Structure formats: structure tokens, C-alpha cells
Amino acid sequence: MTITDSATTSLSDRWRDAPTPHTSGAWIARAGEVADILAVDAVERDRANQEPRAEVDLLKASGLVTLLGPQQHGGAGESWDTAYKVIRTVARGDGSIGQLLGYHYLWAWAARLVATDAQIAAVEELYTANTLLFGGAVNPRDSDLVIREDGDDLVFSGRKSFSTGGRVSDLTVLEGVLEGTDTHVFAIVPTDQEGIVFAGDWDNLGQRLTESGSVEIRDVRVPWSAAAGFVDKQFRPLAYNTLNVPAIQLVFANFYLGIAEGALETAAAYTRERTRPWPYGGADKQRATDEWYLLEGYGTLQSRLWADEALLDAVGAEVSELLHAPREELTARRRGEVAVRVAAGKLRIVDDGLDVASKIFELTGARATSNAVGLDIFWRNLRTHSLHDPIAYKKREVGDFVLRNEIPLPTWYT
Image (cartoon, rainbow, N blue to C red; front, side, top):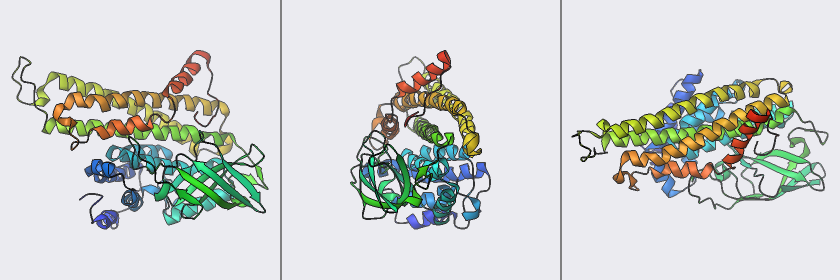
């Protein structure tokens, strides 16, 4: 059974009578079930490039959408440490859906990053009780949305080149600048409204099912009371606000790792089942799994991914601890130290993941380049999203810390 079958409803009902997971390990196992379903026809769905509505329904039915939501509203109340591992696991089956889930977690947590206590409570009850998926019209490289005041309302207008989640999201995070000022305002609004117009133009090399196309925001009204972190029209900043970038950069690194793990698992299965031994090497090997160069190749690639996993797990535990600690306790220094660790983890998995996604072709053989096999999906997905921001700057951030003991200044990308 595949996600694109007419039996989609039975897929969503898969966990109807199953006990709700109550431990981190059980939630990661649930994510593994989702990944297995997605992996069956990931290539076909990627080629079709359709809105991933059934995939989002699957995420909702599994309970993963409300993993970080408060237990009193029906959420799992899990930690970011678990969330990072869940993102990675889902991405093993489908990198696009791992990205959608990871972005959702960040935007669902955005209220905690910048909002008032009352706003946090309202947003978390809304999305958790109703199992809503977040998207975001926030792209720092574009011109900011323009916000004008109209009485007690703010009115957002403009265009963004990328809006991950797009048409399959229930809630959209908007960000813009108040007209005539340099004041940035975040707000969460329902996606399904006339003023949010998606172009449906996402047709890129990889991560094709992330609904990351452009969007026009046409006079979307938000009450001042919904402006995140504002009290009496004044923003009340905390150092904790700046954790959004390290948190999402680590989201990236984890779905990169998931994609790379999926690539290696898929290639290894192909080699075991279909790759033929080379008959001219001087030894009459009966199976491809006896080939020394294949054993060496898989051993090298797997050891790199295990090392990346260990680093990302350690950094994930650090970031999770900060995200769940009292907001007032975070210092600029500690924020900078963890940002450097995130940068190190990201640059390692980008280099190693792309190497894995390329070298698997050498280990599977010429027949594995068939479009029907679909090994290209892993490289395309990794190559596409790893261009989000230049990896060279991540290396520089780590170098600055090592040689000068300097932490990166908070920006939209560090």
C-alpha cells in the first residue's frame, strides 16, 4: 500500500486503535512507521510533484504534528531533542516531508521565542487542539512585507519568493516591517483566506514536495493584539528570541542526515539484491557483497554518518536544553557557543551527505542509474536545500570561534 493509493484513508487510520506513544523512543518508532510508508513511493510522488496533502494527513494522523504541543491540549509534550530525531527519521523516507515537519516544529515554537505568555498559550492551544500545520512566509533575502497601521489592526502586504508549507498549511507565519520604522513584526494567521495567494510555482531540482513556492500577501489584517511579543505596541525582546536561527539550522542538519541515511539504506538494499560482482578482478566472487571495494565503500560512508549522528545528537541535546529552559536565563555568550556547534554539525553533514548521495552510484553500478530506481532523489534533495545559505560561512563561524574565541552575531542566518 502506498501513500498515493485510493486507500489513503486506511493509512491515516493506521494508528486509530494503537496506543499513544508515551516515551521519546516510542515517538521515534512512530516516525519510523511514517518513514516506511513514505519510502514506498517517494520517487513516484517526487516525479508527480503534486501538493502533499495525503502526506500531511499522514503526519497528522500519526500524532507527529503535535509532538511539541502541550499535553493538556492533546499534544505529546515532547522535547526538541526528540523532535530533531523524529525529523531525521521521517526524512529517511521522504526528505521533503521531513522538511515540512521540521519547519512546522520551528514555526509552532515561534510563539515561545518571541510572544507574550498569553499569546503563547493561545497559539499552542489553537494548533495542538486542532492538529494544525504551520507554514511560513518569511524569507530574509526578499524585501520585507510592508505593514501599515489601520486603527487597532496591522495590515500586511507584499511578496515572498519562498513560503514553505504553502497551500498545505493551516496557519502561516507572516513577518514584515512597520511602515516608516525599522520595527519587525511577526504574526500568525489562517492560511485559507483571500489575502494569501500562492503561485504554485515550486518546481525545483529537489525537495519538490515542500510547497516552497512564492506567495503574495494582499492586505492581510491582524489585530495589534496578535503582534507577537508586543505589549501596548512596544516589543519586549529577550535574548531567547535569537534562538530561532540555531534551532532551525539544526532542523536543516537533521533532515539532511535523514536524507543521507535513506540514501545509504536504499543503496545497500540494491547492492544486496541486484548489484553483480565484477568478473575481472582476479577473484571469482559469487556475490557483490563479497567485493572488497564495496565493503570498503559502504564501511567508509556508514562510519561518516554514524559520526555525524553522534555530533548532531550531542548538539541537539544542547539546543533542546536551551529551548526548554526559562527564557530569561539565556545569555548572548551561551547562545553564540551553541550556534557555533550547530554550524559545525551542519557543515559536516552537508559535506558527508553529498558525498554519500554521490558515491552510492559507484557502489550500486551502472544499472542503478535507471530512473525507475530513483537513487537521484537523495542527491537532488540534499543539493537543493543545502544551498539555503553558503556553507563557507558556517566554516568561517567555527574558525572564528576556534582562533579568536569569537561567537557569531545573531542574524537571519546565524
